[in-house]
Amino acid sequence: MTAPMTPAALQAAVQAATTAMLPEHLLLLGMVLLIVLEIVGRWQRASLPLALAVVAAAAVAAARLSLADFSAAPFPGHLSVIPATLLAKAIVLALALPVLLMARGEFGDGVADPRGPESVSRHPNISGEFTILLLASLYGACLMQSADSFLTLFLGLEIMSLPVYVLVLLAYRRPQAAEAALKYLVLGGTATAMLLMGASLLYGATGSLAMEAFTRAVSAGGAADPLARAAAVLVLLALFLKGAVVPFHAWAPDAYEGASVPVTAYMAVIVKAAVLLAAVRLFGNATLASPLLELVAVLPLASIIWGNLAAMRQASLRRMIAYSSIAHAGYLFYALLGAPAGRLQAVVFYLLAYGLLNLLAFAALPPAADDGQRDRLDHLKGLFHRAPFSALLLGMAMLSLAGLPPFPGFVAKFLIFKNVLAAGYTLYAVLGLLGSYLGLYFYLRMIELMFMSPAASLSGEGSSQRLALGASLACVACLSGVAVVAVLPGWVLQHL
Image (tube, rainbow, N blue to C red; front, side):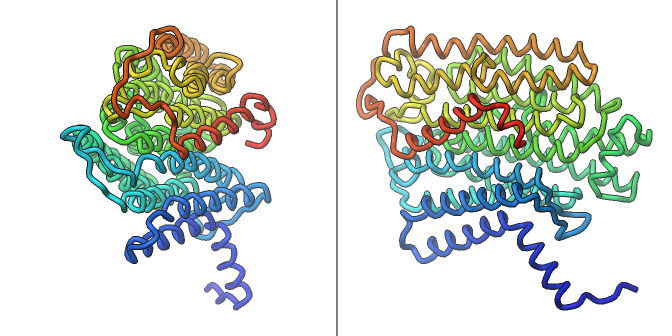
């Protein structure tokens, strides 16, 4: 029989649990304060600054705990933190800051009615609703990084996903938003069902819901139990659906196009980062065996090829970014083929570079009279002659996402394919590398439109190409991060 804990031991356990979940506690505190502001009905303008302060504090707390090599298991078997976990949380939270800065100019100043740009409805509380939902989603994203069991992983995934379904609809500026949110909801529910079915089968095969049981099931040296392998396949397919990997990608182009710019940026960067980091934690030190090996090789490869090919035909910037995101999901899941020792480092560096450059592209997107006009690639024609600052930042983002040196996207892709080659999968590495070259066309097409085409004729209020203050601050923040990653990639890798 276990002896009861002494008051000193109990106090130490409570203190360790509080410290381990400090980023989550700060986000929860922020949500409570924002809800109070909404109920009181005053100081709505303080919603975005308060959310920025809370997310920044949570990111700093996670980073400081990581640097202090803090480790704890406040809920043994279900939730624990190690320095790598805390670093993942810090990166996810830090990438959310530019999203909040971009939202400053998107919400609260008037929302275009989908019936036409001339009809504008005022919604002064939209920033409060946006920040509450965003912080709730971030709470789930952080919880996923600490999960040790499928119970915690499921809770984190749903807490992250449910607010995003609403965010797609929130302050919608386009008639496609409702349809996009419905598609995202239905396919997100499908992913949840697949994850739960996989966890149930895994429990039936192993008697455990711990992530270690999944790691053993996918490992080359693990037990060849067909039930456990089927469970692992279902869980992997659920992650593919959440990460928008072909053929589970159908929700992404519509959701990205229908949502507002900050929400699209959030889905493209934060949601993808949370899912991939959780996948790396789930796979642990496993060396993949069939049938997981073929799934991780073939479907991400198809995602790389199809994402790049489909992006070439898009006339909408956000749909193009969606298909680009599908291709990048392929590169990221390809990292699971690599040796376990370098898997986490490659994924974190890729997510850092990819996230900063995607956020920079969204933040630098010039304004327009209505959201439909803003989203058209034709709107970028001759942008360098009208708004050189926006054009240069967008050009830098496109060249880096294409993986061209000396931009950080080149180093990120190099790490992924180097690890795949080191693991002995030469054919898959070569095919993936060839598939990545397909993306050069549409990224360079953006450069051609901005720098080598005559300026598009703009009229009305859309003729102003000046970025809002929030978007400008987001550009500066992203540009600072890109400069560090580009100039000091070795230093960044040493700290990952």
